[in-house]
Length: 383
Ligand SMILES: Nc1ncnc2c1ncn2[C@@H]1O[C@H](COP(=O)(O)OP(=O)(O)O)[C@@H](O)[C@H]1O
Ligand SMILES: C[C@@](O)(CCOP(=O)(O)O)CC(=O)O
Ligand SMILES: [Mg+2]
Image 1: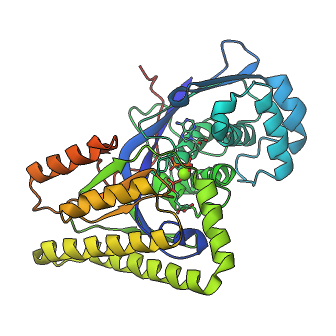
Image 2 (image 1 turned 90 degrees about the horizontal axis):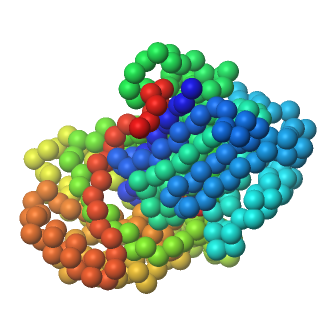
């Protein structure tokens, strides 16, 4: 039997980085998905195979070799999301080294480590083939790491003893409330391997979908009363969330008072964002859009002050500013993607001009549906 799971990426509208330190953030799912298909039993019966199509990596581990390094952990323990200890990361790294991991792709090794941890913890040592494909740019601030961990956790849990699913149902299905909490906790353990110190906002919005306000592990759903349109510009400058998050923490320990003031200011922006977007004053749409734009500019200024902007991001800001459009980076920054608010009254001709100018720098612009469903699974064989 084969199972397919899909989990959405996200945009952070306000509060990235601050959320790692316990301050509020506002995030929304987008309709770009990472898809994981899982078939139990592999062509070569005694292996666990992982195919990462977007990054051109293929792995095949003999089950016996995995058992040799990890069976002392007592897996599977699918109902108990557990931190992957440093010692276990080392054992998993040995398994990755066995596969002659290409030096040029070493940044992707933590994702493979997260796979092996989630796989063996949830399903143990059953042979299988797992294929990952994504519509999200990898490492660009749209939460590909979370979507990867959420979709993997969903596919694995669907085959575990810990969740109850009706396999006869057709189409995309959602998990029951208790099962989805378990899934989200496993995804967070995967994110910890990739990010070091994730806040949990990315995996939560990918798991539950919609727009959320997130603070210190608690999530509140936001019911948006405003149409929201943003342009996403991928600067294509590669960056790594783990390093950026660690840099912000280091700056915080060097300047605790100044950084706390900045992070508090970011939280005030997230609070105001969520109040405006939920406001029922539909007559004030243009005014509210203007206020959201101002908040985005302020949030971007504060992100610059904590050291996570980048020359490419500044180029996007300067370009959109010429058209009086507000922008901010989204996700960890340091490159990656920038959001530009597109007010309802803005003409298509202006959007086309902005996109043309941004793309002339080699950036890639696109729009995405905001606030759709979270993780889903299907028992129908993908074609
Ligand atoms: N489709 C994918 N295939 C393989 N690895 C992936 C995929 N999506 C995410 N990853 C993992 O997530 C990492 C990128 O995560 P991160 O730096 O947090 O950026 P973001 O989450 O913003 O895309 C990659 O280095 C890789 O380990
Ligand atoms: C910087 C941060 O707030 C968001 C990171 O998002 P992304 O991995 O860049 O998509 C980190 C976190 O919340 O865990
Ligand atoms: Mg990430």
